[in-house]
Amino acid sequence: MQKVVFNAHYLTYIDTAIAEYWREIGLAYPEGYVDRYAADMFLRKSTVEYLGSARYDDQLSVLCRVASLGRSSMTMRFEIWRDQPSHPSPLVTAELVYVNVSVATGRPAPLPEDVRARVASYETLKPD
Image (cartoon, rainbow, N blue to C red; front, side, top):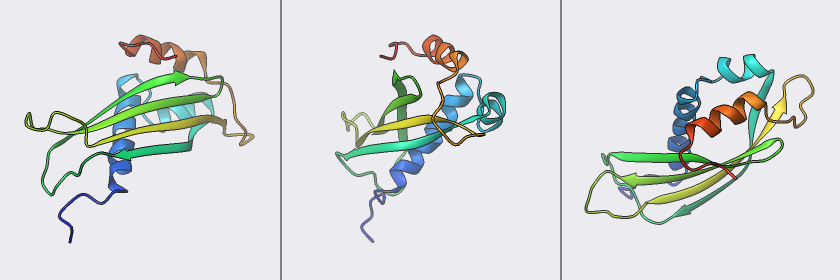
Protein backbone atom coordinates (compact mmCIF):
# COMPACT_ATOMS: atom_id res chain seq x y z
CA MET A 1 0.00 0.00 0.00
CA GLN A 2 1.41 3.37 -1.03
CA LYS A 3 -0.63 5.34 1.55
CA VAL A 4 -1.63 7.85 -1.12
CA VAL A 5 -4.82 8.23 -3.15
CA PHE A 6 -4.82 6.06 -6.28
CA ASN A 7 -4.57 8.35 -9.33
CA ALA A 8 -7.86 7.27 -10.96
CA HIS A 9 -9.84 8.19 -7.83
CA TYR A 10 -9.25 11.88 -8.51
CA LEU A 11 -11.56 11.59 -11.54
CA THR A 12 -14.24 10.18 -9.22
CA TYR A 13 -13.84 13.24 -6.99
CA ILE A 14 -14.15 15.44 -10.08
CA ASP A 15 -17.28 13.59 -11.19
CA THR A 16 -18.85 14.27 -7.79
CA ALA A 17 -17.99 17.97 -8.15
CA ILE A 18 -19.65 18.05 -11.57
CA ALA A 19 -22.85 16.60 -10.11
CA GLU A 20 -22.81 19.33 -7.46
CA TYR A 21 -22.20 21.97 -10.14
CA TRP A 22 -25.30 20.83 -12.07
CA ARG A 23 -27.35 21.00 -8.85
CA GLU A 24 -26.06 24.51 -8.12
CA ILE A 25 -27.24 25.79 -11.50
CA GLY A 26 -30.63 24.10 -11.06
CA LEU A 27 -30.13 21.12 -13.35
CA ALA A 28 -29.77 18.07 -11.10
CA TYR A 29 -28.54 15.13 -13.15
CA PRO A 30 -30.04 13.21 -14.89
CA GLU A 31 -33.63 14.50 -14.69
CA GLY A 32 -32.65 18.16 -14.77
CA TYR A 33 -30.62 17.76 -17.95
CA VAL A 34 -31.39 14.54 -19.81
CA ASP A 35 -35.14 14.65 -19.28
CA ARG A 36 -35.43 18.41 -19.81
CA TYR A 37 -33.35 18.75 -22.99
CA ALA A 38 -33.51 15.18 -24.43
CA ALA A 39 -29.70 15.37 -24.47
CA ASP A 40 -26.78 14.19 -22.40
CA MET A 41 -23.22 15.37 -21.83
CA PHE A 42 -20.59 12.81 -22.88
CA LEU A 43 -16.95 13.09 -21.86
CA ARG A 44 -14.76 13.63 -24.91
CA LYS A 45 -11.40 14.32 -23.32
CA SER A 46 -9.78 14.48 -19.91
CA THR A 47 -6.39 15.90 -19.05
CA VAL A 48 -5.11 15.45 -15.51
CA GLU A 49 -1.90 16.76 -14.00
CA TYR A 50 -0.73 15.23 -10.74
CA LEU A 51 1.22 17.78 -8.73
CA GLY A 52 1.11 16.11 -5.32
CA SER A 53 -0.56 13.26 -3.47
CA ALA A 54 -3.47 13.18 -1.09
CA ARG A 55 -3.06 10.75 1.77
CA TYR A 56 -5.46 8.54 3.63
CA ASP A 57 -7.95 10.59 5.67
CA ASP A 58 -7.02 13.94 4.07
CA GLN A 59 -9.92 16.36 3.68
CA LEU A 60 -9.99 17.63 0.10
CA SER A 61 -11.67 20.46 -1.74
CA VAL A 62 -12.52 20.12 -5.42
CA LEU A 63 -12.89 23.44 -7.23
CA CYS A 64 -14.55 23.52 -10.62
CA ARG A 65 -15.73 26.01 -13.20
CA VAL A 66 -16.85 26.14 -16.78
CA ALA A 67 -13.91 27.58 -18.70
CA SER A 68 -15.48 27.69 -22.15
CA LEU A 69 -18.66 26.96 -24.06
CA GLY A 70 -18.49 25.85 -27.67
CA ARG A 71 -21.36 25.23 -30.05
CA SER A 72 -21.96 21.72 -28.69
CA SER A 73 -19.17 21.39 -26.13
CA MET A 74 -18.29 22.56 -22.64
CA THR A 75 -14.81 22.66 -21.12
CA MET A 76 -14.53 22.48 -17.33
CA ARG A 77 -11.42 23.10 -15.24
CA PHE A 78 -10.69 21.65 -11.82
CA GLU A 79 -8.28 21.93 -8.94
CA ILE A 80 -8.10 19.53 -6.01
CA TRP A 81 -6.61 20.91 -2.81
CA ARG A 82 -5.77 19.42 0.57
CA ASP A 83 -7.71 21.37 3.21
CA GLN A 84 -4.62 22.49 5.09
CA PRO A 85 -3.09 25.98 5.12
CA SER A 86 0.37 24.38 5.18
CA HIS A 87 -0.17 23.13 1.59
CA PRO A 88 -0.48 26.30 -0.53
CA SER A 89 -0.89 24.68 -3.97
CA PRO A 90 -3.23 22.24 -5.69
CA LEU A 91 -2.54 18.51 -5.65
CA VAL A 92 -4.26 17.96 -9.00
CA THR A 93 -5.38 20.14 -11.88
CA ALA A 94 -7.62 18.84 -14.65
CA GLU A 95 -9.51 19.89 -17.73
CA LEU A 96 -12.47 17.89 -19.05
CA VAL A 97 -14.25 18.46 -22.34
CA TYR A 98 -17.87 17.36 -22.67
CA VAL A 99 -20.02 17.18 -25.80
CA ASN A 100 -23.77 17.69 -25.71
CA VAL A 101 -25.39 14.74 -27.51
CA SER A 102 -28.98 14.29 -28.66
CA VAL A 103 -30.53 11.25 -26.98
CA ALA A 104 -32.61 10.56 -30.12
CA THR A 105 -29.77 10.62 -32.65
CA GLY A 106 -26.64 9.97 -30.60
CA ARG A 107 -25.00 12.86 -32.45
CA PRO A 108 -23.59 16.15 -31.13
CA ALA A 109 -26.26 18.82 -30.64
CA PRO A 110 -26.00 22.53 -29.83
CA LEU A 111 -25.88 23.39 -26.14
CA PRO A 112 -29.32 24.60 -25.05
CA GLU A 113 -29.51 28.39 -24.63
CA ASP A 114 -30.96 27.81 -21.15
CA VAL A 115 -27.79 25.93 -20.13
CA ARG A 116 -25.61 28.74 -21.48
CA ALA A 117 -27.63 31.30 -19.53
CA ARG A 118 -27.47 29.30 -16.29
CA VAL A 119 -23.70 28.85 -16.58
CA ALA A 120 -23.14 32.52 -17.44
CA SER A 121 -25.19 33.72 -14.47
CA TYR A 122 -23.47 31.30 -12.06
CA GLU A 123 -19.83 31.83 -13.00
CA THR A 124 -17.94 34.77 -11.50
CA LEU A 125 -15.42 34.70 -14.34
CA LYS A 126 -17.42 34.33 -17.57
CA PRO A 127 -16.57 31.35 -19.81
CA ASP A 128 -14.85 31.96 -23.15
